[in-house]
Picture 1 (cartoon, protein in one colour):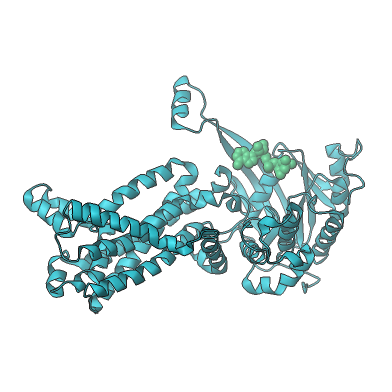
Picture 2 (cartoon, helix red, strand yellow; picture 1 turned 180 degrees about the vertical axis):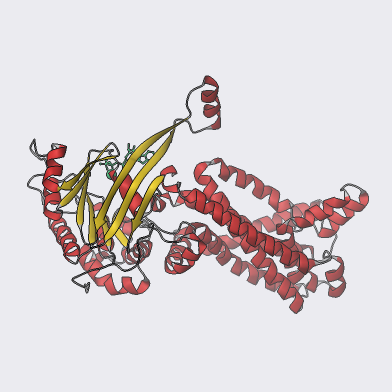
Length: 299
Length: 250
Ligand SMILES: Nc1ncnc2c1ncn2[C@@H]1O[C@H](COP(=O)(O)OP(=O)(O)OP(=O)(O)O)[C@@H](O)[C@H]1O
Ligand SMILES: [Mg+2]
């Protein structure tokens, strides 16, 4: 060891633990990287199919939606029905996986949190990154599927897809931070989150197209403001942006599809949603910092 | 000299909930019983530790020693008062935190090191020292889950004790490992002390405390009951009256 004989710490006296927050997670990204690697290594150890499980589960759900909703209930009477479902699933998966894992992340790591001083946001962030890691192979499958359906390159669509993915990521991190902290104090949070996950699946244009919402309004089954309310949901907005990237460019007449199947002001809505999501993320982080003070004693 | 730890009027309160479910809570409320009791584990404690000082923290079980250490390391926040520290904090607290039984010894050294705040370069530089210290070289690529409990403890110990720090907190008896290992640990802690690092040592072992520290604090039910020379602290605690069961230990 090469420590100097006279050891004098530099810097001012400060409360232990540093600034904290998401910036601290980024500063200690080596730790984040190792925790992430551990998570991925450990998750599939001793399982024969390994990482393939991350394909199998969404695939099973996909076929369930396809046959039950599409074929049996006849929802498949629109163009590229299967592609529409799958594109929606891929981007929504990022959210639901992060929400589920992020909510449990703090409680799951209680042995660390009660003993060692480290940025606790690391655990929700790591949940997001694990989910993002699993989205990559799904995106590849989606791209192949889209090509089979006649997808063609569309720069506007790519922009929409990226915006949708970023929006979804910010929303996912927001809920992971918020519910992760809340779960320390109320373990009911886990069950609550599982329940709303079911609802989320049906609240976005994935299994049915946006058209159906408009049609319901015209029939009088939904009030006029129902459509606006539906479109205010930032999750629905993110899914629509993703559909604009993968689904409408595969249509026979893709220009018409992009005009008619998408709401007006798609991008404006997207950027506003992103702004709102960032404000929510900031608030969730502040809330997290407040609650974090009593994590160690309540775990 | 300048202080490296300032504890100023610190109080830490725990709320103890006698109920876990909503139903129990409602029933208790209706009966007019208290649902949440608060309990002061640390009460208005103040002291300074000088840079490079070795200080012992003593007291009976449940007197609040570990809680005070968590306040200093930043794992917990005080309810009143403030804790200020200077420099990097490490220590023998929660040894082997984050060890994963399915990962190899090597992977766990890196993971545990990163958890304790080491950078990649730092772990690389110290890796061989850590392995030598723990003496688990042959089992480096074996899953830690297959280590004996003593070996696991040694590995955790070795990583923690090689963390570069200004303040070193010890809250675990050096009872892990066999006798030669214990001796090695004490020697290493002594080195840290001689290098001028601040050492904060929680122990019931009067021999070790006398050997390592000049000054001692005594906690009594969360209050600072004594702050002064080690010998007087031991007398204050009446630890000198009867035969020390640890006497003769390293
Ligand atoms: N998270 C917590 N919630 C409620 N009470 C707690 C919590 N942590 C500690 N306590 C209580 O605070 C008191 C002090 O505990 P602490 O662990 O600091 O004692 P200690 O001096 O380290 O004891 P020991 O010598 O056994 O290690 C105890 O009465 C304990 O029950
Ligand atoms: Mg203790």
